[in-house]
Image (cartoon, rainbow, N blue to C red):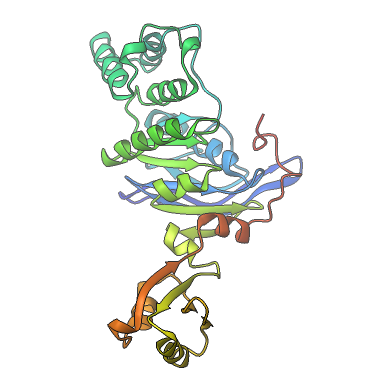
Length: 318
């Protein structure tokens, strides 16, 4: 089922709570060395999916292979290959940053010399070296989140689950964490990310899956998903009213605005369509051009029903 280039493969994943289906036959594939983002409203099944793929929760039906191992039959091997950063920090605030990392090294059975090198490298990489010997209780929210992710990386996993990792962070801390994720992927690490921040998925994800009602209702790159939603258009600004009239004759489905000297044409976001629009337009006929495409907010609103009233306990934020 799994190929050498797939870090995660899922087929027909089902999960129910108290007779209510949370996941209803989810299929997805995550190529190695990429970021895959799961979007969806509360109760859509994002956290449930992460818990099943990380062996924390059994599936009712379906197959899943993570890092080449069957989640049900080879759970120990899966756990040895992955790292998980959940919605809620695993940092022990009574310990220092260095002690938290050493604790993870002990749990991972790293030898003393290797553990010391790994801890120092992670402290430096996550910009925590100056605060390494302070208790984590004194850390800011962004520092705690960086420490939490550093703890996930102590054992050197090649596949990481990040379940809403930037919730509650200020914009600067969020972007710092984005940079860290990009560095990890550049090193060949695979990341499965769940997030409520659509900009986060747009910035980081190679592919995005949209969960709603327990089903994967859409999947693709950010650009592909944006093309699913109507509302994209090209706006041409004509040099004068005569050229505007000529453009309107050329594009009968367009909407001219004589006062602004603009012409608005529907556009699906593809380069091929844009080339067709521009073909044959004289350089002096148009003084400006703007391409407007739907964003992921539009995609999210169009594809999901925004239901939160029937969310499972695993999906409702505390």
